[in-house]
Image (cartoon, rainbow, N blue to C red; front, side, top):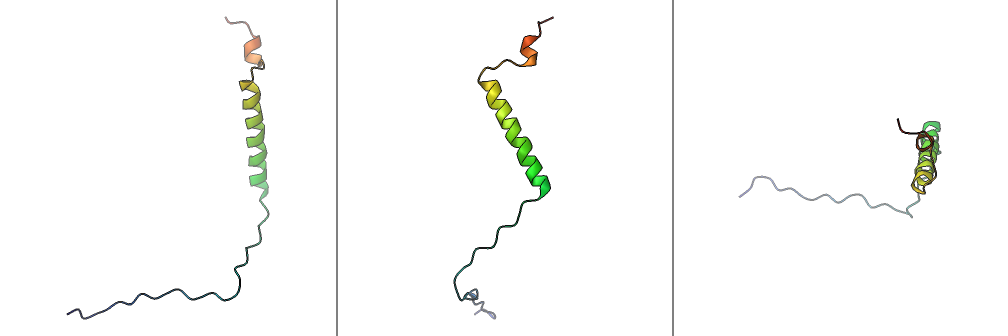
Length: 61
């Protein structure tokens, strides 16, 4: 026969409605990274569509 018994302790019951946490404003660094990512995505889409780039304009040596 075991000397110890363990009981499962249930978490405390929260009263009231669950409120959403207010959204924090994004930091300046995050905003800058988002801008770079958007520009890079636009550039890659433009390249996929077949627009010429500077590398394509130069004659091969």
